[in-house]
Length: 429
Image (cartoon, rainbow, N blue to C red; front, side, top):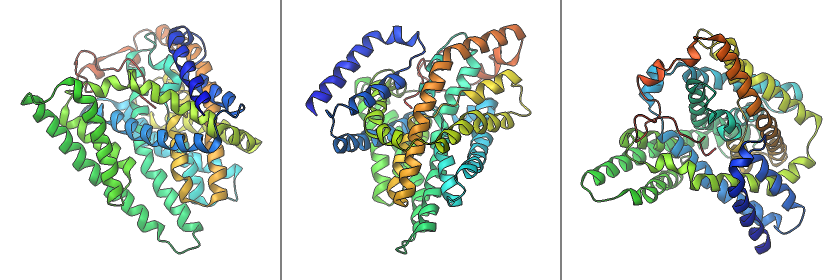
């Protein structure tokens, strides 16, 4: 175990020193760390049981923080009033992706219960901007397009989570043998979690602003306060039988509304501690889950992955943007860049204890296999597709994609510097 940790620390240090060069290639950090985890799993230096225990801890911490911090950066009123593309993709595209995804899964798994198919589709619906970093941070791609992908990725995991929990409860209820009322349990999770999150997020943000005005705190302590508020929301929700992850997401929304850009740590996290946490999570996925998932890899899984990546999301996004000023090229671009990453893996881990063991093992294997396939496909195509898209948009001349009137009228990301309201790095996910 000690030797394995030493190798991981040394590998992370070496990658950090070469990160700028690596980012200029088709390789991405998720691809590299998943592969390193898989390689290390073959050496026996990390006992599988220990790796899985660490993974669950890292996964929970990562999910709580990414839900809270992604939500805290969003200006909800601006999203509602000014930003049509991400709004459409979230409000229309996400439900359609779940609906189309469940039908596609049924074609390959007709023996699965309907709620299990909906659960699988909900787990595969969230996207991960970190896997398409070459697109999100590429200045040749119009800012409005990059912003739409960033915002969609930042919010769709939190919006998909209630569906994941609901269908997990319904799946457990449909297959339950001991009479436990999973429906009542699910209802409490979905109602008490948001309530606890709203109270903690709004209260914590208001107290932070008050402390800043009274000169009782300083920027150096914002990190401790922010992470603590996210943790309080999670723990308060679990104490009253609510869902801690939904609480973290709602708390982030309320916290961001209260502080209105006065907490710089919210924006700095993804460029510092967040990177290390993300790398560790992908490494542990490769180490603890990928070997077993590869043992269960089948043509059924490959078929589900192909349809999910190449048909379900593109079709859902295409329909969601009907009636907007998004061009044909932009709709295709949005449809492809919906990589499945950390949120998909963490949601799968989250529901495993709730449902039938055999069904849970199959669902987890499908999710993890699709994550590594997406990491490769979207990582390899990110730079070439960004160049192709930028060239197409440039050839179109004056078009909506290059206009900034919509985004400059009211910043969507509430940033401490109002002139720089687009994060320079993708979200933690």
